[in-house]
Image 1: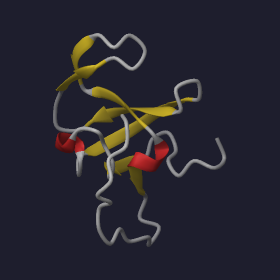
Image 2: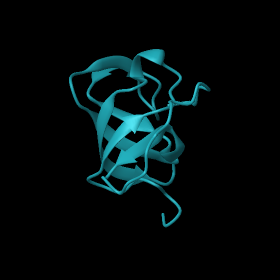
Image 3: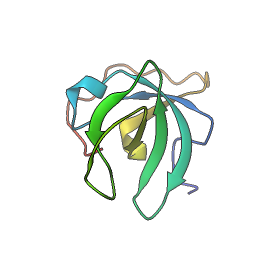
Length: 91
């Protein structure tokens, strides 16, 4: 887990997603799932429709899984995000 950019408790910006609706959303990083290679995050600002990571079942939730590379942590460390990457990544 030492190579991950995000940490539990971080606010982060979604910079890559298979769903264009997620780009630019703010999330609260909660827990890393190494078996899925995903962070469990809470969407700030509401629920969304999607599919479960393990089950593939339809769901409506404010909890989503993102790869570390899909999130840009916002910690105030001076790093500036120049622009959001255009390529999509699987959620």
